[in-house]
Length: 246
Image (cartoon, rainbow, N blue to C red; front, side, top):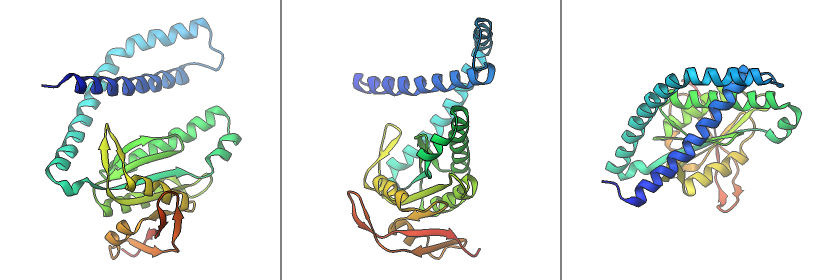
């Protein structure tokens, strides 16, 4: 069975996750049911609604958790059985000029922008069978098990998230990663982050490993651009991914 150290790690992970979940659910309910200047009666109404909805929340939580657990366990078992599958495509999708945009919007508009960005990114990643590792407000981190899936996913992300203001840019790298507690670490992750900073709004920039893996595939065009310095990684050779002839 599980030892004490493992149980403590699982409890800590559960606490962090459920704390964020409770915060999100509370904010959603309050935002949907209350005005900006709620009265005591309004607050009481929210509490009554929460009490009535709690059993349904619990059933939904358990159902979604079981589905996520099954999917994650399948991926992790595949990693264990095949050492080469620890090689993943890692991507960052970043809202361009988020600091400037955040100063121009009020709090509600900014919240809508971030929530819409995260929701659309999550939908596209799920449609391609990828995994949304985490959201960071103006940025999402995702993975895919192979380079082709990642390339097609990121091109769809650009289409879904738009190329206007604020726009989105994506960095993508392919290589070994270290999965820890649901997150991913390693040089491949760092490289993807650095490539995001190189990308222009509405574009996808990939490393040489991913570019070589998808060169020649239908519907994907790979364009080599000049080498760039990447902080902590030296000079890197980036490639722009575009939609090509089917």
